[in-house]
Length: 351
Image (cartoon, rainbow, N blue to C red):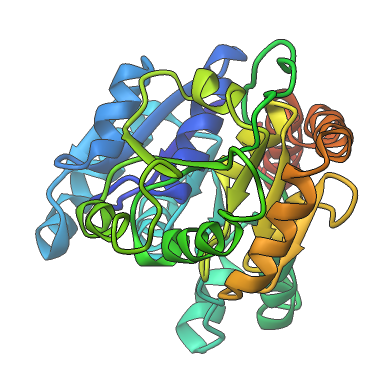
């Protein structure tokens, strides 16, 4: 199958990772895949690194001027499916596909609910299928577009061949960019609550971002030096995660998709996560991890204490998470579920 993915954000994101992971797996599966987006985007840089054929254009209004050439290039490529991953990409896909025998698939992986206005309904009527990445978005799409074909396909990822043994020390790990929505400050507050009751407590937050230096300066006044560590961007995420007893995803918003939660599961680590976005789809409370209310550092501290003080419980939850990842969120499961949607969306097209 010939497939074009359009992901035109100017930055890296969960949506971009979803699209890149899928496109790369499809290419390995024997499909002809092209990845289109903004020429100045790190997303296209990563697509090239993955060995995908790319096409870039200028962002903003200038990008509209490239529609005629995009239509010509799409006609020459003869896609069976054009998969749009953003709202503007959806518009571009519909313009490109207008006179081609191909289906447009719109993946909704952003936190905002779909609009139900006249233009949105017009676009939905010309869309072969919608893919929702979590239950919340699936329900919203079905309500906004009752006649549309809607399928839920959660992101899948590649993981280690086997989960390493649980870390001996009571270490909680977080792997995320330093952004207010990710909840680092909540984790630091939880660590301050626990430092006197969990001997040997360590909290390691890997990543980069605009909040990093400000939080680093807060460690000494909060009495968290020697307890909380900021190693920055880690070269080997799997090695970082293997040194942790539990993984923490304390986001206060967004998280339509959560690569970090899936990675902790693939590593066989129990996940403590907020009840936001798609996280409740991934983490089964009391089975593969623990869910806490977003923004509640007291509840987060209690959940951390229960797993850091009870390695056997943490190990059991982590093992169940690894099994669930293999069953529901592995890369091949992701690929096969998406291809089923593509096949159904394109079934009415001339062969």
